[in-house]
Length: 184
Image (cartoon, rainbow, N blue to C red; front, side, top):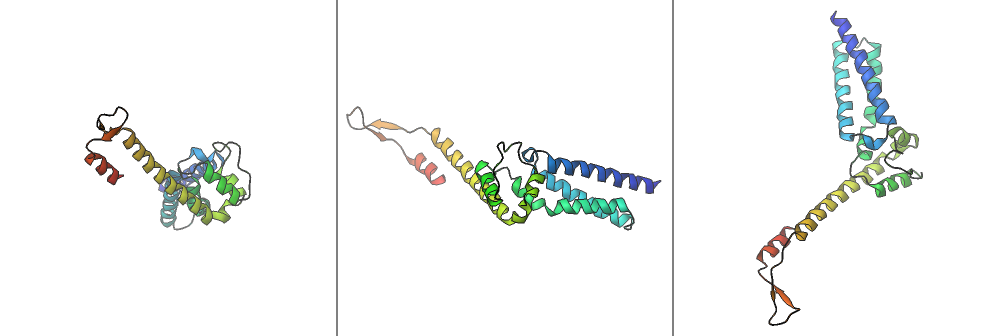
């Protein structure tokens, strides 16, 4: 009975993985959490290897599952790079320029991972990783700048009239402002 349970698990895992792979590769790319996809692939890879040890390597369906997972596993770094949430339209333009392709009209639904593989994105994985890394760095800078902007927009400046003029003022106590300036 345990043998049938193992086989049922293997068949079930293969079917689930095939369905997930279909979604990851053929559904709009922006709808997926790339980090979660890679975690799931790694989980299936580890579980399949563990099952192979338990079955002593005598299961064709398991061998096919391992083969399918390895193929997807090979593209995980590319998937992470392209699935980076920091990738903006300007970065996608760079990717498509690198691939010598026109940018799809709607980036939210016009891009699938399989479509990117079809135009040989995997052959440019290192350059795409660089674009993705730059996107991540730019996002960090933009986030920091937004935080600085928000802090300064909410900062009140104490002012006093300059001598007895109506249209000239001087800053009051600037110690807090200097501290905030140094922090930013």
